Image (cartoon, rainbow, N blue to C red; front, side, top):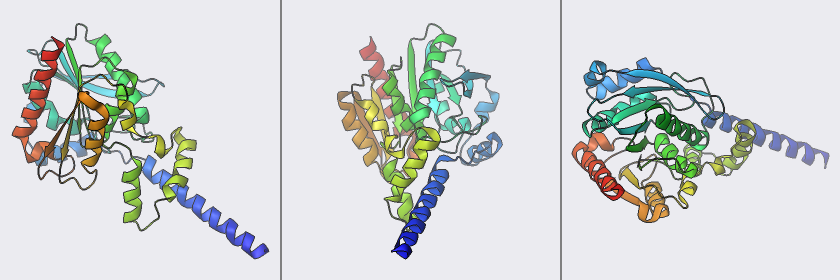
Length: 300
């Protein structure tokens, strides 16, 4: 009996240790420098237009005092139209440049920023849209206060940024539209797929979730952007590549259904994760442009 108890305690200790390590791996972010991000952008598309632009750097203090680094790319001709772009996991504000030029050409002032724990921001756990959504809501409030007389304010996010954009709708931000590109509806299934890739049982995520709750206030099961769409009144355009092998397009389809008549889904054939705008830039721009035109028409 004593041997059985000792074995059971050892197994529990091993499971606990594994859960802690998995939570640590999921929560900690490997921050990418602006310099490294810039190299990636330069290797994949032209950003010389960005260098030639006027840029205004500033900081925003979030709901809990955490400082977010942001940058305004002003379009003198845009006037009262603004868009806030949210980048993907481990990326930083420069990862949003692939969308920034499109919005500048559509007549928007563009705000790019580093998500919590990314870029120039202080190290922090990634909560897969939970805290990040509150940060974005703070940015919306700051944008309204900082740039008065805004007629049209939108959100656009990629991957983690898309999940953050959707999750922020929970706080009923004063925005006119949102575009969510290849976001996850909930993080659990994505992390479980990662466990399967490491030949580990999915139930270990429940153990890791306990440690996540202890460390950052949120279990992985609580990181569900789709839940923020209940009662949402903001028009949302969901875009997803149908060849996305990391976050299946079913996540966007599920969120679109949850958004009801406020949701619209566009799939980009052959596009892999976070590559829709590269795979078919003309279709991408048309989908976004038509969507914004519809929003403005309904706004009156």
